[in-house]
Amino acid sequence: MHTIKLRVGEGIYAHLMFLLKNLQTNELEIIEDVEKDTASQEERIDFSQFQIDAFKDIKDPLKWQEDIRSEWDK
Image 1 (spheres, rainbow, N blue to C red):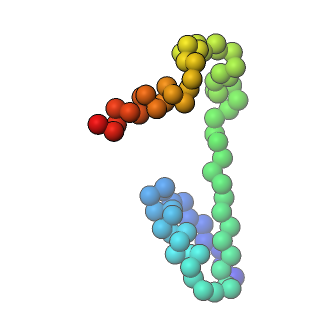
Image 2 (image 1 turned 180 degrees about the vertical axis):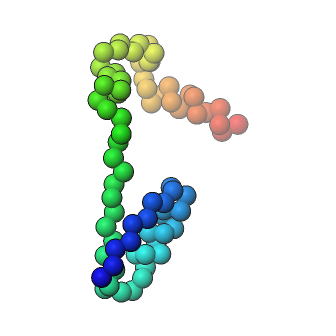
Image 3 (image 1 turned 60 degrees about the horizontal axis):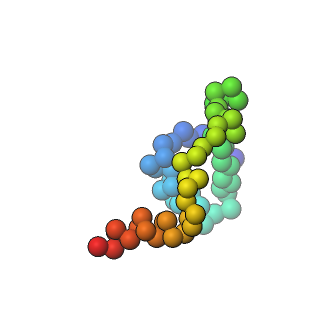
């Protein structure tokens, strides 16, 4: 058994996985490494510390969304 490691971009990843998963063989085991989030906890923004009032005046959110999208029907 041999091991091959590949570092592939997003554009080719789905195609390569499709190809590998459709090989009809029991001699292939696909082991995917999930790319880890490299941002540390200090770099992340804690949105719980913010008060956001942008949508506080909307009484009926569904009606508001329908009104916004109605312009697409024209």
